[in-house]
Image (cartoon, rainbow over all chains, first blue to last red; front, side):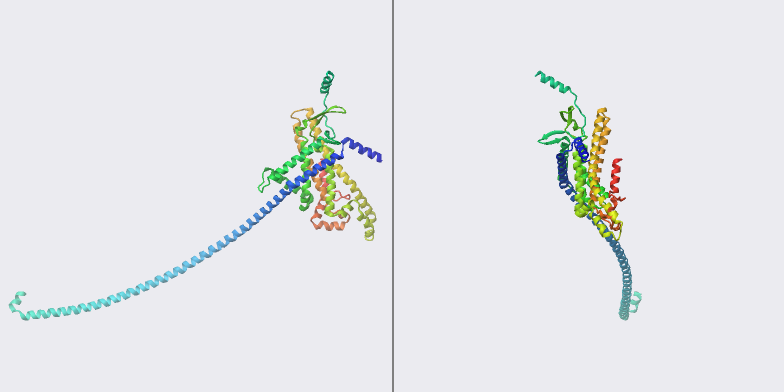
Length: 163
Length: 325
């Protein structure tokens, strides 16, 4: 049995030219390939790909955060705009009210001033009228006195001529 | 002088054999060591891989160039393929460097076997007259190369198993002392263990033969496919020298990729099986627990679907059957 097995193995070895030295040489070749690929290709490439994946993941995360922040800011902006509009509307209303009040006050003041002025003018006019009347009276009296004096000093024919 | 000239003319007129041999032919001798054309091709492969690796290493950038892009795609897709076998990214990352190295080594060896440079060679007088010996022969068309790779794959898988699950568990996979010990500890609970345990122990011994079968299947499958391809190409070229061999060249390019892929995936399968716990198969209760545990157990469970008594995985059988097809 063992002879048959040995013969079979010998036959296989001689047919395929199996040589342990070449097997070791090929194993060494593969060892070199593995070492070179691992050290110069797979390890640095893996590191780079990992770093890039992390960077991309971080970038995506940041973008997500930025988007959320942007939405938050946009929402705040919207709220602020609404608030500002409300404030503006309120201010406008207050201003309108104040303006109306001011206008009313001004109107009242102007009216009052006007009335005062009118009153003053009337009083002034009254004073002027009285002064004028007094002046006219004294003037008339003077004229009458003068006329009486002239009448008394003239002859009756002169008077007729004058007439 | 005249005799010498007539001898030379006779030699030239003598027909030169271009037959492809089953073994790699020696092209140079260094003392006792024969440098075969397959070994020469393997050295060329080593040089090509060193050049490619250094070129890649020197041009590594965050924004990849063409070469880096190609490597990144290969690495990324290779890892995904590993994940399909292991179901565990951490395990894939551990196995992947050796699997991709095997893939590139076999692939370039396969492809170098079909380059037209095989036309350069020596004319030597052999047992059957003058014979043409090409300088290049596909490294994997020599059984010595495939045996070296297969032995490394199987031994490497067992070393990986020892590192991953421990020496005792790996040892018990082959010499199942734990199962024999179970006769004394479990006989009261389960009397059938008296019958089951020796069978389990025997199955473990068969596993040892299985490891040698793995080596044989890996090495002869690769050698057979690549060598058959070379024979096919030579036959086609002998029948019709032009145009007709071209489709077969493309076929061989494809076969080169497929064979490299099959070898690499089988290597990943062997490594994954070695890294998983083997005693689960003999302890149904624990296996049920493990199937719910996830992680590494999930990987094992996936590979061993459907679980077989001899421990050969379903995943492996699928791959082998696809290869046969």
